[in-house]
Image (cartoon, rainbow, N blue to C red):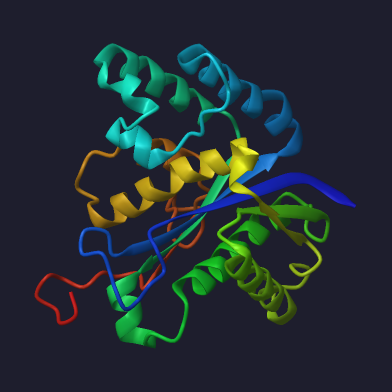
Length: 254
Protein backbone atom coordinates (compact mmCIF):
# COMPACT_ATOMS: atom_id res chain seq x y z
CA UNK A 1 0.00 0.00 0.00
CA UNK A 2 1.27 3.48 -0.84
CA UNK A 3 1.46 6.13 1.85
CA UNK A 4 0.59 9.13 -0.31
CA UNK A 5 3.89 10.81 0.61
CA UNK A 6 7.27 11.20 -1.09
CA UNK A 7 10.56 12.36 0.45
CA UNK A 8 13.40 14.21 -1.31
CA UNK A 9 16.85 14.42 0.28
CA UNK A 10 19.82 16.72 -0.31
CA UNK A 11 22.97 17.63 1.56
CA UNK A 12 25.06 20.65 2.44
CA UNK A 13 28.78 20.36 3.05
CA UNK A 14 30.93 17.32 2.35
CA UNK A 15 31.33 14.38 4.69
CA UNK A 16 35.14 14.36 4.81
CA UNK A 17 36.61 14.29 8.32
CA UNK A 18 40.23 14.64 7.19
CA UNK A 19 39.80 17.97 5.42
CA UNK A 20 37.26 20.18 7.17
CA UNK A 21 36.31 23.55 5.72
CA UNK A 22 37.03 26.06 8.52
CA UNK A 23 34.26 28.33 7.24
CA UNK A 24 31.64 25.57 7.12
CA UNK A 25 32.58 22.64 9.40
CA UNK A 26 29.12 21.12 9.04
CA UNK A 27 27.38 18.32 7.22
CA UNK A 28 23.60 18.69 6.87
CA UNK A 29 21.15 16.24 5.36
CA UNK A 30 17.71 17.72 4.64
CA UNK A 31 14.55 15.64 4.09
CA UNK A 32 11.53 17.33 2.47
CA UNK A 33 8.32 15.37 3.01
CA UNK A 34 5.54 16.06 0.51
CA UNK A 35 2.01 14.74 0.33
CA UNK A 36 1.94 13.43 -3.24
CA UNK A 37 -1.24 15.30 -4.20
CA UNK A 38 0.19 18.59 -2.89
CA UNK A 39 3.46 17.97 -4.70
CA UNK A 40 1.82 17.24 -8.04
CA UNK A 41 -0.97 19.83 -7.90
CA UNK A 42 0.73 22.74 -6.09
CA UNK A 43 4.48 22.48 -5.54
CA UNK A 44 5.61 21.50 -9.04
CA UNK A 45 3.36 24.06 -10.80
CA UNK A 46 4.53 26.83 -8.43
CA UNK A 47 8.20 26.13 -9.15
CA UNK A 48 7.59 25.75 -12.89
CA UNK A 49 5.80 29.10 -12.98
CA UNK A 50 8.70 30.78 -11.16
CA UNK A 51 11.12 29.42 -13.76
CA UNK A 52 9.05 30.57 -16.72
CA UNK A 53 8.31 33.98 -15.21
CA UNK A 54 11.96 34.77 -14.50
CA UNK A 55 13.89 32.74 -17.11
CA UNK A 56 11.30 32.07 -19.84
CA UNK A 57 12.02 28.32 -19.73
CA UNK A 58 12.09 25.50 -17.18
CA UNK A 59 15.57 24.09 -17.84
CA UNK A 60 17.12 26.17 -15.06
CA UNK A 61 17.88 24.24 -11.86
CA UNK A 62 17.39 26.04 -8.55
CA UNK A 63 20.69 25.82 -6.66
CA UNK A 64 21.06 27.59 -3.34
CA UNK A 65 24.74 28.41 -3.84
CA UNK A 66 24.30 29.98 -7.28
CA UNK A 67 21.24 31.89 -6.08
CA UNK A 68 23.11 33.17 -3.01
CA UNK A 69 26.07 34.28 -5.14
CA UNK A 70 23.94 35.59 -8.06
CA UNK A 71 26.00 33.33 -10.34
CA UNK A 72 24.69 32.57 -13.86
CA UNK A 73 21.91 31.95 -14.65
CA UNK A 74 20.97 33.72 -11.42
CA UNK A 75 22.91 36.87 -12.33
CA UNK A 76 19.47 38.38 -12.91
CA UNK A 77 19.39 38.62 -9.10
CA UNK A 78 22.07 41.30 -9.20
CA UNK A 79 19.14 43.62 -9.90
CA UNK A 80 17.75 44.36 -6.42
CA UNK A 81 14.14 44.64 -7.57
CA UNK A 82 14.33 41.34 -9.46
CA UNK A 83 16.01 39.66 -6.49
CA UNK A 84 13.28 40.82 -4.11
CA UNK A 85 10.51 39.64 -6.43
CA UNK A 86 12.24 36.32 -7.11
CA UNK A 87 12.90 35.55 -3.43
CA UNK A 88 9.31 36.42 -2.54
CA UNK A 89 8.12 33.88 -5.07
CA UNK A 90 10.51 31.23 -3.75
CA UNK A 91 9.35 32.03 -0.20
CA UNK A 92 5.77 31.40 -1.31
CA UNK A 93 6.63 27.74 -1.97
CA UNK A 94 7.34 27.40 1.76
CA UNK A 95 3.81 28.55 2.55
CA UNK A 96 2.64 25.17 1.28
CA UNK A 97 2.01 22.50 3.90
CA UNK A 98 4.90 20.08 3.46
CA UNK A 99 7.32 18.92 6.14
CA UNK A 100 11.04 19.37 6.65
CA UNK A 101 13.25 17.17 8.81
CA UNK A 102 17.03 17.50 8.96
CA UNK A 103 20.08 16.04 10.65
CA UNK A 104 23.25 18.07 11.14
CA UNK A 105 26.74 16.89 12.06
CA UNK A 106 29.26 19.22 13.70
CA UNK A 107 32.34 17.69 12.06
CA UNK A 108 35.10 18.79 14.48
CA UNK A 109 33.17 17.53 17.49
CA UNK A 110 32.02 14.41 15.64
CA UNK A 111 35.61 13.52 14.74
CA UNK A 112 36.78 14.08 18.32
CA UNK A 113 34.01 11.83 19.62
CA UNK A 114 33.96 8.93 17.14
CA UNK A 115 37.14 9.24 15.07
CA UNK A 116 37.47 9.28 11.29
CA UNK A 117 36.20 5.78 10.46
CA UNK A 118 32.51 6.58 10.88
CA UNK A 119 30.83 8.46 8.01
CA UNK A 120 28.94 11.61 8.96
CA UNK A 121 26.68 10.92 5.97
CA UNK A 122 25.68 7.51 7.29
CA UNK A 123 24.99 8.84 10.79
CA UNK A 124 22.99 11.78 9.43
CA UNK A 125 21.05 9.42 7.17
CA UNK A 126 20.03 7.17 10.06
CA UNK A 127 19.01 10.11 12.25
CA UNK A 128 17.02 11.63 9.40
CA UNK A 129 15.21 8.45 8.39
CA UNK A 130 14.21 7.84 12.01
CA UNK A 131 12.68 11.28 12.29
CA UNK A 132 10.89 11.01 8.96
CA UNK A 133 9.52 7.65 10.10
CA UNK A 134 8.21 9.17 13.33
CA UNK A 135 6.38 11.76 11.24
CA UNK A 136 4.89 9.06 8.99
CA UNK A 137 3.87 7.17 12.13
CA UNK A 138 2.13 10.26 13.53
CA UNK A 139 0.15 10.49 10.27
CA UNK A 140 -0.88 6.84 10.48
CA UNK A 141 0.96 5.80 7.32
CA UNK A 142 3.83 3.80 8.82
CA UNK A 143 4.34 0.48 6.99
CA UNK A 144 2.88 2.06 3.83
CA UNK A 145 5.41 2.66 1.06
CA UNK A 146 7.12 6.04 1.07
CA UNK A 147 9.79 6.52 -1.59
CA UNK A 148 12.92 8.39 -0.45
CA UNK A 149 14.66 10.08 -3.40
CA UNK A 150 18.35 11.02 -3.44
CA UNK A 151 20.32 12.78 -6.17
CA UNK A 152 22.92 10.62 -7.89
CA UNK A 153 26.53 11.30 -6.85
CA UNK A 154 28.17 8.66 -9.05
CA UNK A 155 27.90 4.91 -9.50
CA UNK A 156 30.14 3.93 -6.57
CA UNK A 157 28.65 6.51 -4.21
CA UNK A 158 25.10 5.54 -5.18
CA UNK A 159 25.81 1.86 -4.55
CA UNK A 160 27.35 2.64 -1.15
CA UNK A 161 24.37 4.83 -0.24
CA UNK A 162 21.85 2.15 -1.21
CA UNK A 163 23.79 -0.41 0.82
CA UNK A 164 23.80 1.87 3.87
CA UNK A 165 20.10 2.64 3.42
CA UNK A 166 19.40 -1.09 3.42
CA UNK A 167 21.60 -1.67 6.46
CA UNK A 168 19.72 0.99 8.44
CA UNK A 169 16.36 -0.55 7.58
CA UNK A 170 17.55 -4.08 8.37
CA UNK A 171 18.99 -3.17 11.78
CA UNK A 172 16.58 -0.50 13.03
CA UNK A 173 14.79 -1.09 16.30
CA UNK A 174 11.86 1.08 15.16
CA UNK A 175 9.07 -1.34 14.37
CA UNK A 176 7.62 -0.78 10.92
CA UNK A 177 10.41 1.45 9.59
CA UNK A 178 11.82 -1.25 7.32
CA UNK A 179 8.38 -1.67 5.71
CA UNK A 180 7.86 2.07 5.24
CA UNK A 181 10.76 3.31 3.09
CA UNK A 182 11.92 2.50 -0.44
CA UNK A 183 15.18 3.82 -1.89
CA UNK A 184 15.35 5.73 -5.19
CA UNK A 185 18.07 7.64 -7.04
CA UNK A 186 17.48 10.51 -9.48
CA UNK A 187 20.09 11.61 -12.01
CA UNK A 188 21.33 15.21 -11.95
CA UNK A 189 19.61 15.66 -15.32
CA UNK A 190 16.19 14.84 -13.86
CA UNK A 191 15.56 18.49 -12.91
CA UNK A 192 13.54 17.24 -9.93
CA UNK A 193 11.50 19.92 -8.18
CA UNK A 194 11.65 18.06 -4.87
CA UNK A 195 15.43 17.75 -4.95
CA UNK A 196 15.77 21.43 -5.77
CA UNK A 197 13.66 22.40 -2.76
CA UNK A 198 15.76 20.10 -0.56
CA UNK A 199 18.87 21.87 -1.93
CA UNK A 200 17.42 25.24 -0.92
CA UNK A 201 16.81 23.93 2.59
CA UNK A 202 20.09 22.23 3.56
CA UNK A 203 22.67 25.02 3.76
CA UNK A 204 20.57 27.61 5.64
CA UNK A 205 20.19 25.03 8.42
CA UNK A 206 23.97 24.66 8.72
CA UNK A 207 24.45 28.42 8.57
CA UNK A 208 21.92 28.90 11.37
CA UNK A 209 23.69 26.38 13.59
CA UNK A 210 27.07 28.01 12.98
CA UNK A 211 25.82 31.57 13.36
CA UNK A 212 22.55 31.50 15.34
CA UNK A 213 22.89 35.19 16.14
CA UNK A 214 22.76 36.21 12.47
CA UNK A 215 19.52 37.08 10.70
CA UNK A 216 18.66 34.12 8.49
CA UNK A 217 15.44 34.61 6.57
CA UNK A 218 15.65 31.19 4.91
CA UNK A 219 15.99 29.49 8.30
CA UNK A 220 12.87 31.26 9.53
CA UNK A 221 10.89 29.83 6.61
CA UNK A 222 12.36 26.35 7.12
CA UNK A 223 11.64 26.40 10.85
CA UNK A 224 7.93 26.93 10.13
CA UNK A 225 7.87 23.62 8.26
CA UNK A 226 9.65 21.55 10.93
CA UNK A 227 7.86 19.39 13.52
CA UNK A 228 8.37 20.53 17.09
CA UNK A 229 8.09 19.19 20.62
CA UNK A 230 5.07 20.04 22.79
CA UNK A 231 7.28 22.79 24.25
CA UNK A 232 7.81 24.23 20.78
CA UNK A 233 11.43 23.17 20.14
CA UNK A 234 12.55 21.74 16.81
CA UNK A 235 15.63 20.09 18.38
CA UNK A 236 15.30 16.32 18.49
CA UNK A 237 12.05 16.53 16.52
CA UNK A 238 12.45 18.30 13.20
CA UNK A 239 16.20 18.79 13.63
CA UNK A 240 18.73 16.33 15.04
CA UNK A 241 22.12 17.89 15.76
CA UNK A 242 25.10 15.71 16.65
CA UNK A 243 26.95 16.41 18.80
CA UNK A 244 24.38 18.86 20.12
CA UNK A 245 26.80 21.28 21.75
CA UNK A 246 29.45 23.02 19.68
CA UNK A 247 32.93 23.54 21.12
CA UNK A 248 33.86 27.04 22.11
CA UNK A 249 36.71 28.71 20.15
CA UNK A 250 39.16 27.97 22.98
CA UNK A 251 38.54 24.22 22.97
CA UNK A 252 41.09 21.92 21.32
CA UNK A 253 40.24 20.76 17.82
CA UNK A 254 38.34 23.88 16.80
